Image (cartoon, rainbow, N blue to C red):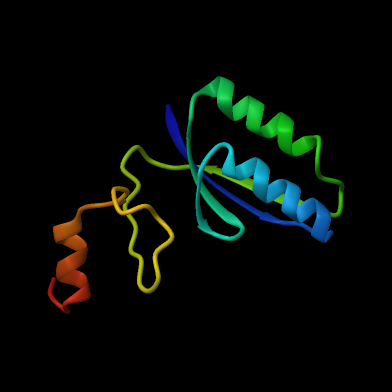
Length: 100
């Protein structure tokens, strides 16, 4: 299993909805057009196949592999379930409080 960041820019509203629903089957939405997905090689290939079936040459989808430890800073309203946290909480708490 490996973590991937999936982002997209879709030209048509109908295709946009279909791409969003497809990505929700594979990962967690970070923002409307950005997802975090933990996938095996087989699931990654399935995601790519499902997305290719929806998009046209007008659209842009990018899938970036992430390091095993995907640290990140989030400020503002969260869309993650309460039990999902990326990174070391103590490390980010110090940064948010102005410490090092």
